[in-house]
Each structure stands twice: as structure tokens, then as C-alpha cells.
Image 1: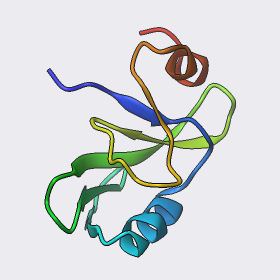
Image 2: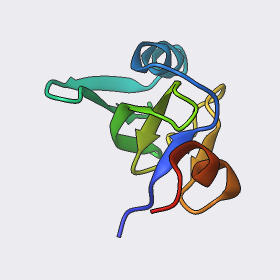
Image 3: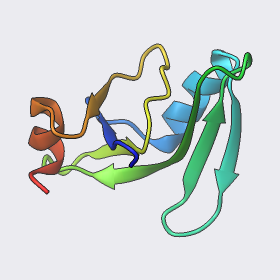
Image 4: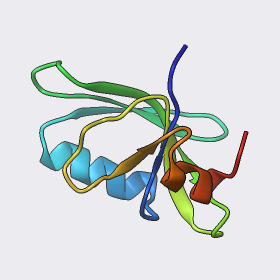
Amino acid sequence: MATGYISVEPMTLEEVIELAEAQGYTVTVEPGTPTSINLLSEDERYGCYGMSEEVGLDGETHIGSMGNPKLDGLEMAVEGSEDYVAICGED
């Protein structure tokens, strides 16, 4: 079963794309509702699929994903952690 993650700080897909491309990741955009992106590192060691914008309990836009893309400048909270629960609430 995949583990959910949420960005600790508010962030948009556009900002994640900029970070990822600057760090050598390949970015693909999946059209739909919601729009999502997939990332693959240059050395193919790290990938993250299905990243999309989510509105947190704070009313801000965060990035949700089913993996940690390991991008510098993007801190992710893992499902069940204190930060995750503060942003997303309990399941």
C-alpha cells in the first residue's frame, strides 16, 4: 500500500515543477481534475507520481502525493505524522 505525503509549507504545482526541473527531474503533466504531475530524477533513483494540489485545513494550497520526491526546497510530511494531521486532519 502506498503512503501519502503532503507539503509542509503551502506550494503550487507550478512551484514544484520549477524546483524539479532546476534539480534535473523529468516532469510530466497528467491532465484531468485535479491536474497531477509525475517526477523522475535524472539518475532514475527517485520518482513521484500523482502529485496534485490539495487544500489544507489552513485554507492554503499544498502538494499531496503518494511518495516523497526528495526535492531540495520541498519538505513533505508523511501520512500519520503530526504535521500531516495538522494540514489534512485525521482519516
